[in-house]
Image (tube, rainbow, N blue to C red):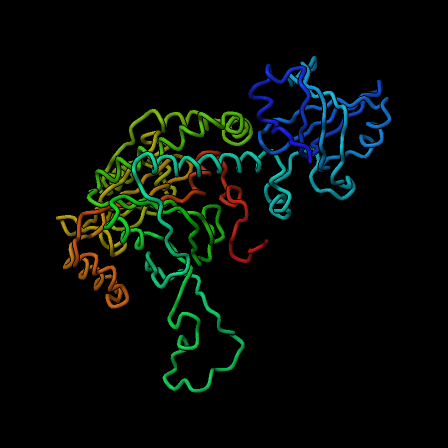
Length: 468
């Protein structure tokens, strides 16, 4: 196989490649034939949004025999010389010396053609949708965000920790978990099991689940290494068919010893500014696609986030603002209830017109591990809200006091015996510590302006859908 150059590398340094022979490999987007016997072939290799135009002289028999078979979707290798292009829309083109057809795509049945397809249709052909401009751009932006996550935390002295995907802990305590078992549900009860303990026959001999969060396990390592982060898949068995929910998604969760809520908020703000800046610097072409066809205010929104300090308000202040807003919300606003997406979007898009961090939430609506404030009515929690998406980061200072943690577990009906190891962290060298979680898919939604979360993950898992 010839050693090919990626198309984005040619575009990044056009002058250096002019009059030079190159080999490119990719897929045909379009082919247009002129009456003068010249074919114009657009080739894309996925490295960037732009196609590279290939000029093929069909008077040459060795090219004619291949070009006449080329159609959208064909996989090709092209050897040729880069030359300045006299045509509109491109500054350079490749004049083909040789074209090899590796994989043909029958235009009569190939489902992607030169037109805009709906996202709903593309989900029915998930194995081909990355070849479209939009989904290809999503993949490149998601890749850059993921890399920036590691760059930020490594720069800040964090250690990357792999927390378990199979766990016996339900961090959120909501019970919306996928059970992991090797038992055959159709099999009759095993003999010799008088106590009725079905788990004695199972692989782990106890209830096991796909993780909903790596937070609790990350706390173990934060209280040994100081600053750690996890970045991996998490799962929620929530039967919710909305544009904001997935059954499988990727979470970024840092945990920091000796951090209070203010330290936590400052880190969260620095983190999200860093990763968005990375995309603004390196994915301008892809972002422009979304600004043009998806969300006209996208660039302004991203640049505002990077430029301005987040607005910080308490939950109580947020409730008062919403009550006095004059807006007719579908969900009523009352102290002690969770804020809904419409409330979050009002605060970020109408009231403050920038990201908003809400702190000090009611104790009753938050999980057991969040630190109880002195008023005993609220906890040291923080939600970071951004325009269009709403909550993008949720975090808190963790409860480090043994007696208060045990009381919280009693109130929330969390069995202390099942979390003995978590309680032990408060017995042996406890320290103030904090952390937050950010769903990568929500971040990609915010960065691209896409309205449906199914478009920002390669293989969406939702109720009734687990393809591939």
